Length: 340
Ligand code: WQD
Image (cartoon, rainbow, N blue to C red; front, side, top):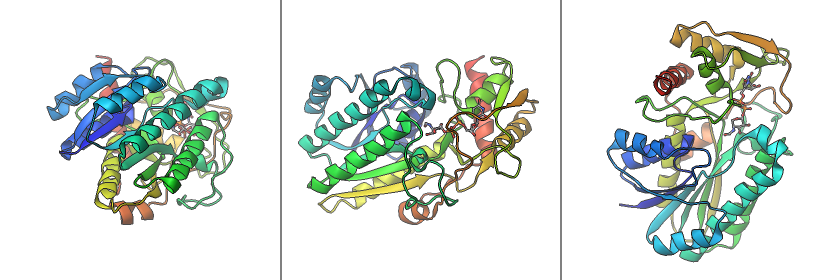
């Protein structure tokens, strides 16, 4: 049974990926510093798969602790690196926190992979590296534009660091997965998104408004150059996104022919949805009328982004199976569960 380290494995996307890895027969070890998650997520994972992954509470900024971890955990076949800070707005207010947390930790993990000759590495990247792409849908060849936030810049820098390491490494095979907009929750309602404080992202704000935690959703702008004037994104169910990580890992393991490779894949549904369409989808599946108002645009937001999915379909053999309505249904079931 191949052992896979998942850093940030108790987070939103990380926990769903741990479940899918276990479903595919991988042994999972989780590192998480619990700065943006809870150890109760471990119980959620076990309640779904019946398998308790090893969990080590560890801050990846603690270099001696990282070195010790890898010295005491042999036979790791691959690493999926989620651990990072991810709030766009917070990164603008506190850039050094983001550069320290997102870049330093990546460097320490990559140093360990090289030292222990761990051959397979998957990096959690983001479509934010494209900024407002010139062409839609967005392919992996779209130009990387100047990041709109320190958060986005840490993803761009992270990808460049990995590419430079792959150029000199004798055995590192790396894939960067550029996520579009992860939404939803596990249909079991055992795990889901646990935003701390006021949600920055659209879907948790919608579900918290619907359940009465928030008074009203603000829709950031309805004068974009889109059919209904609101901004368009590619909302991908978190379970589909988790399965894309397993597909990427299986490609790395199958293709490990010595030498070093680096690939990027856009992970989206290939369909764009406007903010108003997301609201309508939520109202349809929940039966709730959402209280929202149109306000001004949010600084740094782009008009539209959705993925060209041919490369991931053809090379990883992965395609999103779940719809926006599935994601709204699961997000709403999850919100009701955690507030009950
Ligand atoms: C989606 C749309 C908002 C909140 C960011 C990061 C990306 C990833 C996901 C980490 C936009 C609108 C939102 C609200 C609104 N981050 N909106 N009212 O900004 O596309 O992507 O989060 O994994 O890397 O860039 O996602 O959910 O914040 O916004 O109208 O209260 O919803 O303007 O059009 P975004 P989002």
